[in-house]
Image 1: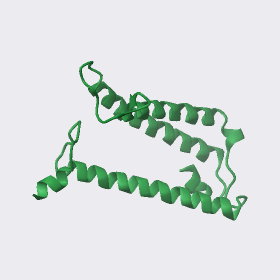
Image 2: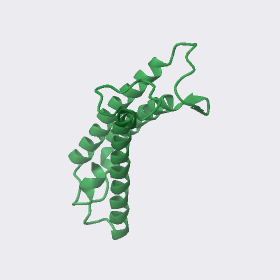
Image 3: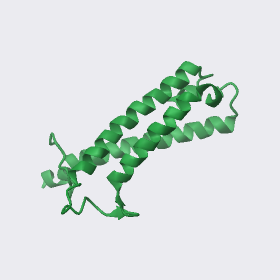
Length: 141
C-alpha cells in the first residue's frame, strides 16, 4: 500500500501509518490462520502436514513470520517520522521501476496463490485440512 501510493506522489505520515496499520491487521489474520493449522497438528501422535524445514513445518514458520511482521510494522509505526519514504517526485526513476517490479511480483504471487487454492478446493465450500490432491481435477473425472 505504501509502495503503491509513493509511486503516485509524496506519502504523508498519516498514509504511511495507515499502510503499516493495514500490514498489522493482515499479519494478524494470516497469523490466526497459520496458528489454527499449527493447532490442528499439535497432538503428539500426529506427524504434521508435509515435510519439515529446519525442524519446523511450513505453517509453524508462517506463524513465526507473521508474528515478526507485526513486530516490524509496529516498529515502523513508532518510528513513522524517521522511516517515511520519499514521494515519487523525489524518487529516482530506478527506484520507481523497482517499486513497479515489486508490485508486479506481489500481484503475480497473489494471483497464483488464488489459482492454486481454487484448484485444491475445486467447487466445494470447504478445503480439507490436509489436502492430498487437486479436487478440481478429481471432480472433472
